[in-house]
Image 1 (cartoon, rainbow over the protein chains, first blue to last red):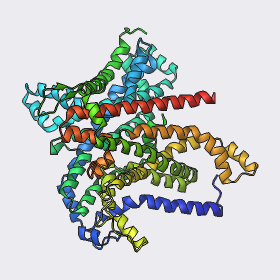
Image 2 (tube, chains in turn brown, red):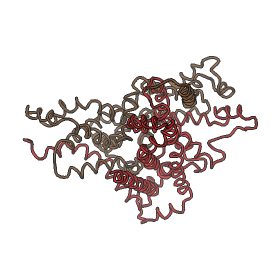
Image 3 (cartoon, rainbow over the protein chains, first blue to last red):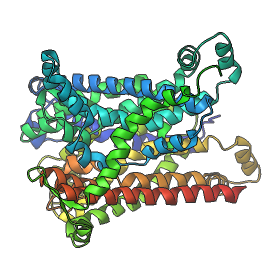
Image 4 (spheres, one colour):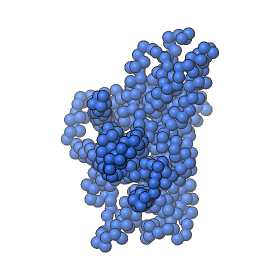
Length: 290
Length: 293
């Protein structure tokens, strides 16, 4: 397709230049993570004269590692529960006829538009997850410990999961609709119940759709800020977003250290991105295209 | 089906209940709470009718926030879509180089948003920021600016610029999906008719992409009501509320100043604006479809 003409070479050259300018802010911050604060101040664009590992030691001691781990745990839990709740619903909406299915689907789809800010105040006042946990903890010492250690996660996971449901149900449902009926009918004839059919026929076939939607949900939960700000108080339970903000607050006068924290938050994600770029791009644009 | 008629409801129930408890009920609750004056230290709620709303109309910070949300919509569309379309056209081929360049343009969207905010806070920093360093080199008369505080009216533009930087690559990918759906024969035909690259773009690409661009622009409008993260990380709505948007002001009123009823009223306004934007979106897109039939 692409014929090399002088014009196309000039054009590509210009675009490469633009890409470099585009990436410059990220590269600048990553390079400056290795410099002392005075070096950043004196020569913002210079490469580090000697590498300052101290920044990373401070970032690690500032619990950046813990925040990363917390985000991994919270994000995986949320995505898992979103999928577990969405799959049966998507199956029912795609395959079964029942009274009120249209209205129910429309109701859940309305969640695609709702800003999280619209639920903050009532959930802050009354969070079903934390209330339930507190009630249960009254009867068990182990749960009391668990509630202290992980209670904020229970509070924040509720809205994470609920806001993840609409798009997941929508995308899985449309994928299930494309699965030929003969396939599921065969399973039903074999005597499989609905859950069995879903598990052994639909889910294996729908793996690409599951991957796409899981990436989308993981990305927004990984980035989510305001719910974490409202529901996570306990420093040990901070996720990466609020952890990074408090880290910056503590080191506001030493930008080398702050940028080391940024480095730790950015580089793992960028590595994942360059390895799985095709899937990730597909997953992240899924919400817009549909 | 051999199963009972109940089966579909049982399959839908977990998701539906979860959604109802965490989204639908709280939304209704937000609307009712917005008619009360209350705070967490003074939990007895006092019914005030629509007073919170009438107060909003005279609240200059709220009006600034509203104006800034609007600026976000307009400048995001102007700043992102033409560039996104241009990039999609320029690096849209299947060649290795183009695929790699697309990956780079999309990359800012991958960087976690809090990190984006901190990176640009550093770049805009008055004493060591990369931006000042570049501008001093370019122009000898340039004096260091503190982009995120002074002059305060310009701060919102600095934030919108970052938002454009982050999302342009995303929209490039979205538009690219539309571009790739245009059959090659049309370009072939245009070439045979003697059309140059620019003419082909004007007579083939633009008309066929019009609908897609409109949809994308409306998507930006719907999304812009919820803008929060960048503003919060970079300025928390400051200095002196100059870069406030609805979501940051709502958070500040509710969770910093403990005016919960007032915050609920702002949240209700956000909800209504989202619904309004969505209505325009649905009408706009379905109207287009009808026009094409």
